[in-house]
Image (cartoon, rainbow, N blue to C red; front, side):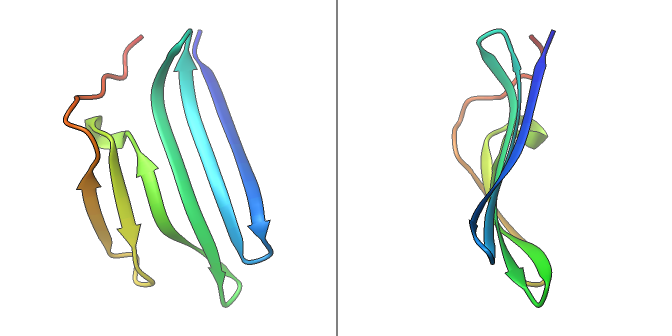
Length: 81
C-alpha cells in the first residue's frame, strides 16, 4: 500500500514551503515541493519541483503564473510500484 505525506512549513509569516510525496515501500512514486510567498493576502507559488508529467522538473512562476519549466534529470519517472 502506498503512503501519502503532505505538510506545510511556515518559514516566515509571508513565506511557506509545501511538501507532498507518495511512497511505496522504499520507492518515491511522486514528489512535489513548492515555495510560496504571500502577496496582498494571496499565496503565490514562486518555484515548484515535481515529478508530474512523467519527469522531474522545476517550474519557476511569475506573478501572472506564467511557468518556466526546466527538466532536472534525463531519467524517466514511473508511477507504478
